[in-house]
Length: 441
Image (cartoon, rainbow, N blue to C red):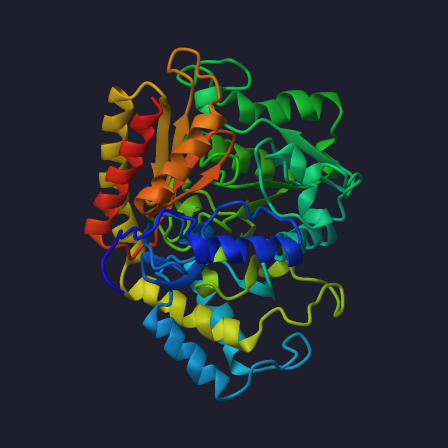
């Protein structure tokens, strides 16, 4: 594919419009509201059905960390297809399962014995974490955070609190989940100064919840994203995560860390939790784990394993083709030190965006780790009022200029390209983004 961007016809072009109209007739409503109809993807570029070429700042929602259609992943998938596709992996053994599980136990934080449960997606990885925590502790309650996104199945949905639409019409989910404020310092829910609050949002759990109506001895786990994804790419203070670990240790509560969007090099380290010098008891991983093939993994302290066969299982979880992709994908990230590359390129991108923030009044905040960057669009810096309308127009304008972006939070643009992105494409993409923001400032 030639270098991008290249816009032949303003998107959506005639072929794209035709497919969009047909799709609306046959596909159930989800979040499919971007007028992009993809024909081909290669590393950091996307070609649509009308021949337009775009720079990819979405990476399939932070999935394509090793780039779209990574050659080494494709080769591993082809090789596995020649052997077998499906083995009923939760009933029978094969060598690919333990090889990926062993690698995950070696590269995740914690110097202790671990095990891995394989599912098909992020929400399944979280469901397994919930079940593990409840079964191991014999406790009924969970604590999650406002702004959290952990999935849409009814168990993980009980933890999710990023948008009302996710919950609307599905009451009741699993009971016993309490939501508390996350360390969203740009919009502190307690209206405190982050410089002097001593992470009150974390201490609130112990000093308010536990002292008022949530007996700590009934709490199985605190579930947290080290960087909130769908909540707005929010990076908390280091002390916030460390305080959660202190609280969980004090009361015999498990700490579950959701690395579904932030893991596998995205934030400049293999795992976002490494930025906080905290070791979780259970981790969930998905999205970037298999370079676009469906796979979720729950990595757990070995002593938290299910106590009897059949307590949890899956037909397709640990599918051999997905695992072959995962093995090649993870090895590629480590071999090519993509986490270090993400740190380097992310630093450059943050610098440019923060410079733009100083100049443009509707950029309220720029934050991120590695290539997980959020640009919060506001009415103006003084009021910090949410500006979803401008955010959405910016994303649409950028698409017409050859840049694919995704929103997050209430009025945030996420910058999450493949970690293999060509540096020239990164710079061009930032040029387009900043130009589009200026149009609506």
